[in-house]
Image (tube, rainbow, N blue to C red; front, side):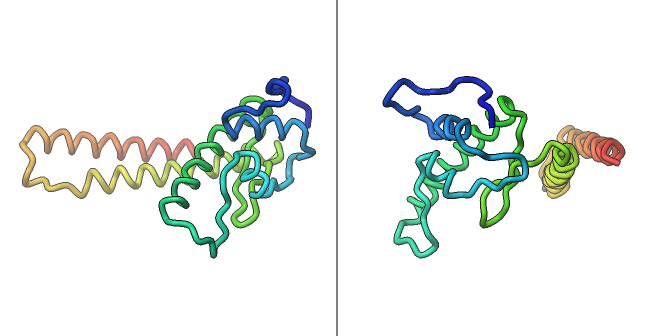
Length: 162
């Protein structure tokens, strides 16, 4: 994979952030669209511990490492998209697949629709499950207006995605 730009840290040094190290490693790796990058590769280059299922770590240690990993992955994916025009798809239990350009539009729209539907359903749940008896008339009006706006947004989203 050709380098989008030179990212080499100074001689004998590494970047402080794991995602930057992963981008340098990606420049030198031979990953191509359709390939699955193994999870072990990300753990190594993000410099995050990978706890096996039988690890004797505390819940707090595990959660801390997971949060670090997720933050590094988010930054890595953003840079990969911006610098290489590549998108990653999680393949549970294996790693992340580099989505071939021919699949990227369809996959992105499918994912976007799922995420949007989930977000709109959450908003709907929060707007409809409210103690109306504890609201003032003005607050009830605001809630009704918000529900109407949400209904219009859902309708428009459905039409746009068809």
